[in-house]
Length: 317
Image 1: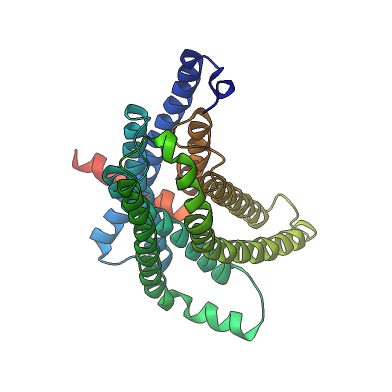
Image 2: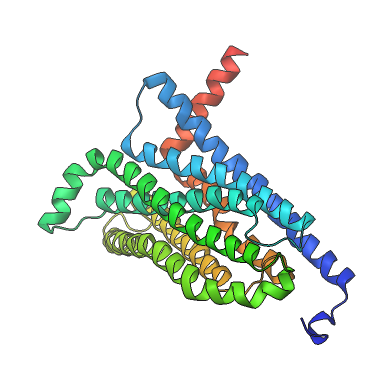
């Protein structure tokens, strides 16, 4: 590291980084509460009825993966904050990386299948393949969940092999400091790990975007017809379509921003432990904090389940 790179006063950087760490912790709390409410609401529904709607199975799986992911994220960032000079592929990081890679991949896939499910159920296309999917998508949900776990396990194993190779090379190098090994590590990351991460993250993202674009297009057309109908903009159906449209657009924006943040972080533009790293950690997990709140506010069935749970709890007390 050159002298110019060290010009900013460490105290100023530490204070600014601390602000983003506090923001990250607040997002962590919001995500825990939001996803926890979804898990609690749908879990109580499952206990009462011994079954869940296919869509709710996807929702509770997404909520559970995000809930667990938040604990891994906060553990990882606390460790980085307390050990800023630690080698990024030491055993502690590898243990956290296994959990993070699996849960992050599962979250991407659950979000993707949720988008596909909504698209198939709500959109009004007449292609034979689409009509077949509309009739059978509910029965495909268990396979969506199993495939998500399978893909996540596979990518986690691949990432673990790459991380382990990095650590073995570090041991062969005589446990040199991170400043000495930084360039070699980043070269290996850019040649091997980065392309692998791009492929494994891009596949669900492309499927998500395709499903979301089809859904938003169909909803937009239907909302336009309702707008120009006799009932017009103020009809309850038009209002419901507009709310659904805004909810799916916000979901797409949050998902895409999270994906781009992951890609930029993996590319090395935001070095581990530095000030920029904390900014992007905040951006990455903004979606996991905001989207559960959007779901709770926009999903009528989820709100009804929560109200029933609150009323039953109040009745027992």
